[in-house]
Structures are given as C-alpha cells and as structure tokens.
Length: 533
Image (cartoon, rainbow, N blue to C red):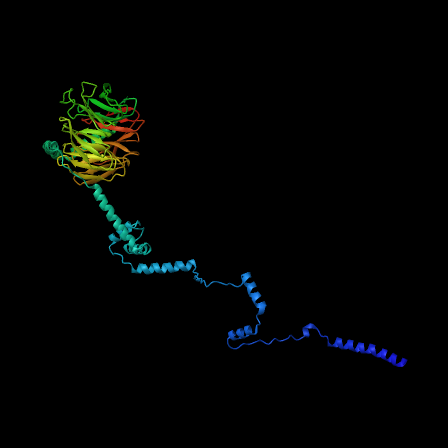
C-alpha cells in the first residue's frame, strides 16, 4: 500500500511536467500566427430584395430605429420636406472675363461703322470720346469707334443724336426773336432814323474811299507816328473825385469837360485838362451807374437845354442842364438801370436795364417809344453806330446783339464769350465791333462777315470797358479789374501801351473827341488823364 502511494506521488509531478512541456511546445510567437481570412459577401442582383428580407425578419429592431433617430439629431442625416436646391456652376473671374471679351468681339463684328472719317469723328464726339489719338489713322479710328459701340451699345449713339437734336431745337427756340406791334410814334421814329442815317452812311463811305486813295507809304508813316505818340502816353493829371468809387467818366463833345459818376450818388463836372471842379450835380440817392453828354452839348446846344443824362441803381434817370446843379427832368423806372447812352442824332436816349431789355426814349416828346427784349439776363451795356442806324447790346448772358433801329430786327448775334459782356463799342469805320467780357478777353467782330475776327487776351481780370479812337478808329482802348488800361493797334490788335497807375479796379474809361486825351476812373476814388508827351 505504501509502495503504491509513493508510486502515485512520483507519477503526478511527471504528468504535470509533461503537461507543462506540452503547453510550452504548443505556444508560438504572434508574428507566426496566420490571420483569419474573412470571406467577402458578394451579393448578386438588387439590394432592395435583401433589405426587404431583413426587414421582414425584424433584424432592424429597436436598435435600428434608435440609431436612425440619433443620426438625425446629430445632423448626420438630412431629412427634408421635399425642397430642392439648385447647384450653381462655379465660374472663375478669369473665365467670365474671357467669355465677356468673346461676346464683345462678336458684337463688334456685327456693328456697321461708316467709312466716312468725318462721320466717325462726329460719332466719337457725340459719345464724349476724343476724335483722334496720336498717330491714329482713319482705319484705327473706325476700329476704336466699333470697339466703343460694342461696349456701350449702338443705342447710346442714337440717344446722343436725339439729345443733340432736342438741345438744338431748344437752342433755336431760345434764340428766336419775337416782334410785336408798336405804337405809331415808333413807326415815325424809325422813318426819321432811316432818313438821318442814310446820308451819314454815304458820307462815311465817301471818306473811306478818299482815305483809300492816299498812298500806302503815307498811310504807313502816319500810323507809325501815331503809334510812337501812343507809346509815349503818360499820366498827365490825377484827381480824387469822390469819397466813394467812381463808376463812370465821359468827355464833353468839345473835350473841355469831363463828367464823372460816383457811388455816393453825386455827379461832377471837371475842367480839362487842369481837373478843377466846375459843378456838383445832386439828385440821386444811390449808386450812379453812368453819366453821358448830349452829342451837341458844348458845341451848339444851349446851356439851359438838356446837356447831360445820368442813371442810378434805383431805376431813376435824370436830365441835367449846364447852368444849374439841379436836374431839370426825371424819368423813373421800377427796375435797376445799368448804363445809358445817347444816339448820335441827339434825339433818342437809351437806358440799359436789368429786366432783360433795353428801351428807346424820345427826348423831345419825353416818352418811351420802344421796349425791346432779347436777352435772357440783364443788359449791361449798349452802343450806337456812328450813323445812328444800329444799336449793339451786351448782356450778362454772355451774348451780344446788333439791332437795326430802322426795322427793329436783330441783324447779328454775338456768340463766343464765356462770361458776361460788360462793354461794347462800334468802330468809326462802321463795320467793326469790340466787346469786353468777364472772361478777361476782348473780341472784335466784323459786321460784313458776321463773325468774330479776332480775340484779344487783353487782361488778367474781367474787362469793364472798350473804346475805339473816335476819329478814324486807329486804336482800341480797354480797361479791366486788374487795375490797368491797355491800348491796342487797329487792325493789327497788338499791344501798344499799358496805362498803369490806379491802385484799384478800372471801372470806366473814355477817349476825347479829338483823340488827344484818355480818361480812366477807378475803384480807388480817383480819375486820371493820360496825354502824349
């Protein structure tokens, strides 16, 4: 028994050791273990049937519903109500530019452009484009017009043409002059002016023929002497005229007196050339715009008669005699009067008004015989032709007009200034007109050619007045707000002399009837006389 027990005890460790060794032998490293190959499930046919079978078996169950609900709440599954969103095709900017360029070239090939170069330039001008470029020929210009039309469209050209036609029509309507029936006194006055002006015109033409017969050398030498004397002009006399600026000055017909108008409301008469005060004319209560002598004053007119006329900003016109300092007659208007002038016939008197009109008065009958409209803004200056047949008006609308007093027609329209016209004057030769403007220039117009023949860049500020030499019109005088007056040759229009000396704006100027003296008045309250040495 003991022997069997000891034998059993010896066999148990041996069995355990064999089992351990066996276990050690069966254990192998991980890298030597072969992976389990999963056979793919290949489904043939539609998955719809498999899904139906799975649902029929109830495989989805509660877990499937809960998973679908969780996916919807997480936003991973989009459940809509049948809305459809269109997918926009993304095109890059470069691709869009290329496509637009192709379309533009296609439109350009279909546009017909005129082969007339002048029409091409007109179309370019209408579109606001330069009509030509440096080195550009007619073919290149046509191609440029075609490219422009391919961008803006051909309708733009049609629209500009329609706008131009409308503006042209409105401009023609704007420039249209209206006439109305006047009183019988106006008809009588027109006949009187015709009978007065025609003989004077014949006399002027005869003098022009005689002057033309003078040898060219003689005329040249005379002109050279005149220019030499004009270059020697100096300030002969300077006089303080008033406490306020002097707005106007005018020589008497005999060149022995000078009349000045002041902003203080006073008009004064001065002796020439010593500049002594002769009379102070009191009657205006506001700025006096102008004072002028009667054409026959100091020559054949009695001192007791009307020798002067003045106008003021309150619309009043006062007539003065030389033997009294109080006005003899008064004409009252309800509008501001800028300036005034008397006709060469000495019968008619013409005030210029800010109500866009000018008026013709008969001094003998003391009545208004003509109220003429024609400007869109106030009429600032007016001048009579030497024959007495024409009147020229300059307006604040930058336009001038020449009127035939015998018929009432506007025979010439002066268009060219960029700003207001402040001065106008006729040349003694009968066919030249000078206008001074706020655009700092002086333009010379020819009645025969009906156009502007020369533009003088006269001053550095607005031109306040222009005057031709009253005998033959051999030179032109201009004054401006640049404190100077200048003398220009006629007909060469070259500068001869600059009359500098005023400390303020030159507001008025005049030339004596004998052509020997020049007077200028200024904002500095002084007037000056200029004479050749």
